[in-house]
Image (cartoon, rainbow, N blue to C red; front, side, top):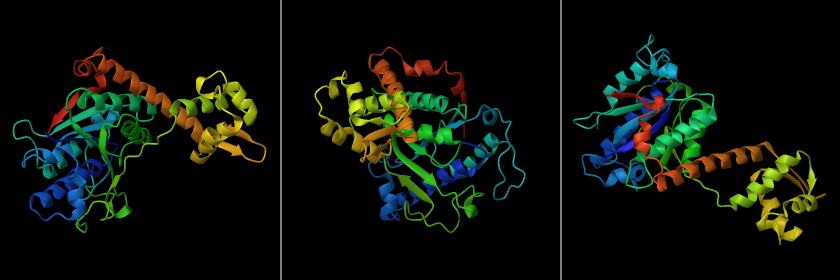
Length: 327
């Protein structure tokens, strides 16, 4: 048993290999009892740390989201330290991983799952990231522990990984590798870095944040504002929402306090206290789209709970999920 790292991949080899090297070095320090508090904390609470001494916290597999051109070996990697004429991205990543990925299954090796996504299409990325997450970490059963590397790949891939973490809660940790200019050609942890997560200026985890709000109510307000496409007075907006259960008995004052001021505080609306008018912002429209993603997650979870689909069997039909390497 070990951890599955979900990673977006572009042309940078180090996005993948530096992360693996860092985890390996951190585990070296923990196993040698030389790890500092931050290094120990990195694995605290992780399911992987509760496995046998040989396996605790190790990387079991990499799930890489990238373009079909990268997967089919059509794209050359960026130059990196020690190699000014690299070959294709896929082979270069495999070559370097053989140097840095030490804690692999003795019999099966380290698995790399290549997932073909449309790197400029957020919805395609999100749908496939969600399916992969539930493929490896199903609702029923223990499943695999997932960490997300948010360093590489297209913006759409990174946003999809982040959305999966927030909406499905399937990622235990999210992290970033430094992209400073002096590190951009590195394929291993730079020599000057002393392993100290969140303190060494190189490896940083991102806390999992979830906003607890009346999702349905906020969604209804924003959807109504989006449909009006103009500034609207609070009284008119509330009147239009009266048919919805949660707004039936609300006074205008309570409506402003419970919804309008909070939406304004979140940046989802532009609310003017002087004339009590509002309009939706671009951030508010993005929030509506995010709730649409939540609907996708809930729909998939419902099918899994009802056992309408067997996602492991289903995954065998996914054309975008068929490429596997063993390192």
